Amino acid sequence: MYFQKQESWFVLYVNVNQEEKVKKILEKEIGDEYKFIIPTRELRERKNGKWHNVKRKLFPGYVLTKGIINIEVYYKIRKVYGVIKLLRNENEVLTIDEKELKVLKILIDNQDNNIGVSTLYKENDSIRILAGPLVGFKGQIVKVDSRKGRAKVNISFMNEERIVELGIELVDKI
Image (cartoon, rainbow, N blue to C red; front, top):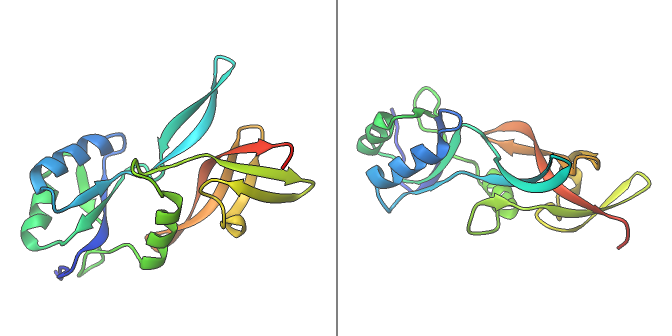
């Protein structure tokens, strides 16, 4: 199997709802020269008749990792409880493409790796993004659900098109 000689982003597939636990173990076992993130998104949810902002995972079951993968690190990662596999093809570890990284960095432009709520203005059938992480993503918005306060956005991740729901706030006036 071929391993990288330079630092890059790669993806771990882990047990769903174990992402934080796996991240903590990896930080302890692997060390400080590696970065582990679990991208989240802020959504508005209604509970007991009141709206609340909650954080949900952007890609459940995945931990994004930055570092150099060699044979030693590969087997250390494989031994961590909760890690199912390192995404790879037959002979090499798959890295996150630069274009995909650019999109993720634009969306997650903060320290806590969270995609915040965007402010939208809807007039007839047209949508204007006024503020938030979706500025510049008008073409990728597939559907807006104003009742739930969510927008379905088409994102490319690991060379696959995925539709994710992101939180929005609709305003009446600009």
